[in-house]
Length: 238
Image (cartoon, rainbow, N blue to C red):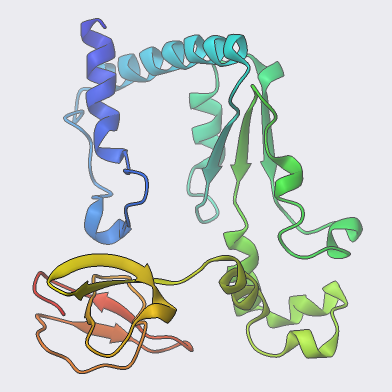
């Protein structure tokens, strides 16, 4: 690995998230982070060019191995730079091995299926690279702001009661809780919390059960929805 490759590796290291770990964007990542690239625009251009070159090399290895596919998900507001990111980062790869999908207004066929149906249909095959410009999160967010959009899906009346998108996701994702039990910390299913467990909370965690506050520091909660989340935290909250 030469000097420039090491510089690229150092640049992306702070953005890596370890598998299984929890991330709170506002606390764990600084949007003003520049990795030492400040006023030296030439250095930034050189890093981008080297990154594109490496990406092209890695795509060739991906195709030769023919074992894995790669999915890139870009979730951001309008005009946040998703298209520009795709244009710059993918400029050096073979277009035959890349597919970009922008999930806009559902088609008639998509409306005849559940709201998650269209996303697995577009997952990349081995050894291709797939890019989602927006994700299923959009389906959860939009209907909360515009519940009238559910009318286009011609759903049974009974299924429209409550938060349909959130209920569907809750059925897929099993809630968990971090607890201190018998002197050791563990992560368990939220439904397994029992009397005597000490529940440990960090910002963004859902409060899994009723309990008594033992110790807290700058703790705030958000109860605007149907669930309670810890939204402000500093070490020592229990």
